[in-house]
Image (cartoon, rainbow, N blue to C red; front, side, top):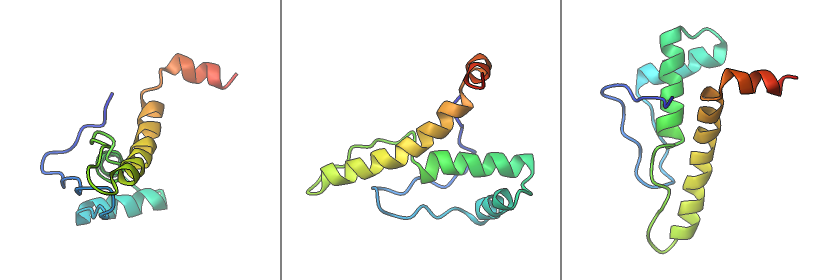
Length: 101
């Protein structure tokens, strides 16, 4: 189960360094999530933004150019965070039950 982007979602920033600036509703959702007061819609909005934009999980890691190796490693670090989240979301219930025994 991949986290699907919402229609009209802010595009990912190009390259490894630019800060991903969310639209105001996403920032509100992130703040509500942090406070433990996010609605189900806000929770999903925050998670979609974290996985798809901030972590650039579905993006290409390869970065060409003079510092391409370093930039590619940086992008892989971002993607790793998103993959960790998706791996837990996609974890079969049986595997989760076995983990707790």
